[in-house]
Length: 312
Image (cartoon, helix red, strand yellow):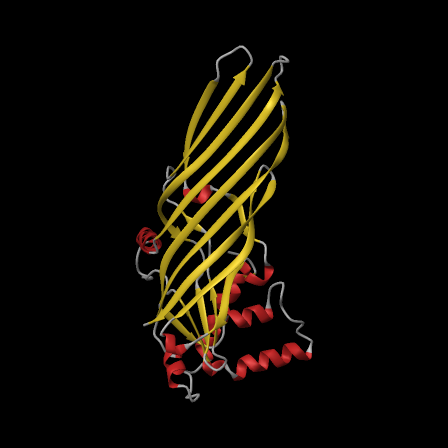
């Protein structure tokens, strides 16, 4: 997450918490009940899928390739720190690429609208690790580590690339056919990375939620990558060369990013929509285009976010 955006999010939230008030009766007691909820349970899963094919030039001649990638991540987070007033909507208005011009009448009007409606808005985030100022640095680090481990999720990766070359020519002038198949598969526990914030506007009956597709894998051996090179040379029996390596789930794919700026606040994925209080919870799905980087090129794919927020 962008440090500057994170700082603005937390700063705005703290400021409003210090000056805001609990929501007054707006005529919708159910919405007010949600507004005054002490905490929310957030569960979410996000997938990234990509399929591509094409041609390229290798050292030995032209090749064709196919690539498939399926990356899935799910987690549960407790949003148990409440502050009155807006946070994400204020940040979107005042900072980032989509910020309004502070000198414009529209900006002033939007600011006033948020200020006058602050009593019908609230924000929740995770309270973070317990802080004991009298504890040693080692004890504080241990508490922070224990907290991060408590935010457990799971992730899965399934990747395959097949590169085929026909009538290739090596340094000695010999002709051969070659197929290189690379597979990477792994599943395991991970820790979400990012700042989760949920903003509820009871008057407008809308919400905003910051999510993430990033995580940390404490293991360096979750993913097993196998590379098999199959060669056919005229007058020789076919040969297979196999190599294996291991890595963490968070190391692949490289350069994973969202391409749709409307789905971002800085570099933070943002979900938003209307609320239906009678449903007893908020559920949503958002599909956005993205990419990862392989061989120095952006490979397109699609993110799908599913999430559920339940008041406590």
